[in-house]
Amino acid sequence: MPATFPTYKPRSIQEIVLQDLKEMQDEKGKIITDIVDILAEKNELLQDMRFRAANRGTDRYWTNVTTSFPRSWWMRYNRGIPASKATYASIEETCGVLGARSEIDARMAEEQDNGRAFRLMQDRTHIQQMSQDMTEYLFYGQKALTPEGFDGFMPRYNTLNTAEVTSKNVIDCGGTGNHLTSIWLICWGDGVFGFHPNNIPAGITVKDYGAVPMQDPDGNTIFKYLTEFRWGMGLVITDWRCVVRLCNIDVDALVSGTGIGDPDVQKAGNMNLLIRLQQAVGLINGVRSAGDRLGFYMNADVLNGLNILSARTNSNVVRVQQSFNDYGNSNDMGSFAGIPLRRVDRLKSTEDKVVA
Image 1 (tube, rainbow, N blue to C red):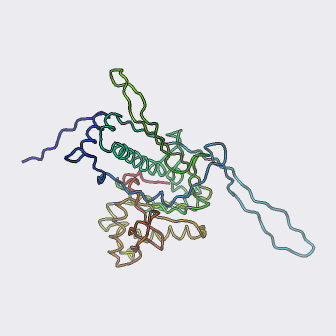
Image 2: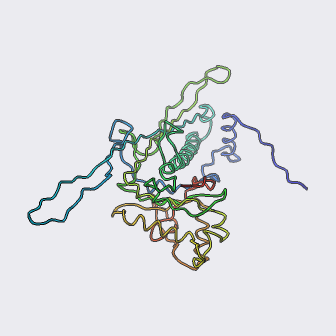
Image 3: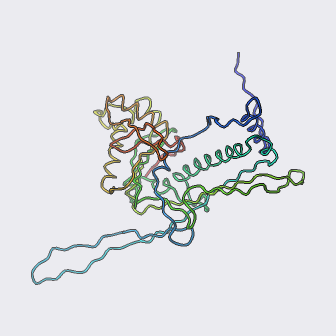
């Protein structure tokens, strides 16, 4: 007997809100507050990021980057030495503001035993979605495509052409198929940090406008509770050496134990992902400073494949350790060379192949 699937019917915002209200109520019509969100995605990136306020205008960050160092000379008697100096380049980054708004029918909310709880649940979904969208944009965002935004990591580390200096920190993992992804090693500190608009705190700001008069589809006045969400962010990279991208990772090969996932490093030309990770750590070790915060960032497919590869090699280079987040909650996470392995679901497994 063939499988049958329900017919999908697009819903308006009003229909979605009414349906959500029904699903949040128990048999007595009261709001259920302990709903498990099965659509939740993990975001372990933002807990590592460092933020500063814009230092030029309201939404720009200006900094000088050293492009060459002064020379030193061996001295001889009766001979002087020439003067020398470092050279600098000025970089100005801009930030963008991500926004969302929630509208809830005032009468519908007020008729519930706990109307505020219903509103808070709607607010949480907006905040969660903005967190996911901002994380994806932080890696893949391009100002050329979204002038209101900023350049993320990908457009800055997206070539193997040795004429580009950042290519030295782009490691090719050899994948050629349609199921490619990347691992990012980022050293958060003076070399890499996020920034937010002046006079606006880092993170999502929420403004509750209360019950606001609006028009229904027939032009009649109704009241809705209006909440607006804003998140201003930009990315500053003053030292390109503080970021390493392991690109062209074939997820299928990693999980199946072929190519980058093959544990046999004795084969000619074979280089499994564990070796590539060590190569990335070697690049970062030369620039990391005390107080910097490091993390490997990958999606769930790669994290699973990496754990499988570690098991195949009978190694303990990928270790599980217990940590506590900012709220004191315990969680287990993996680490490589003492650097946390962070799961970021918005990193795609359908990236284009990075070429020279």
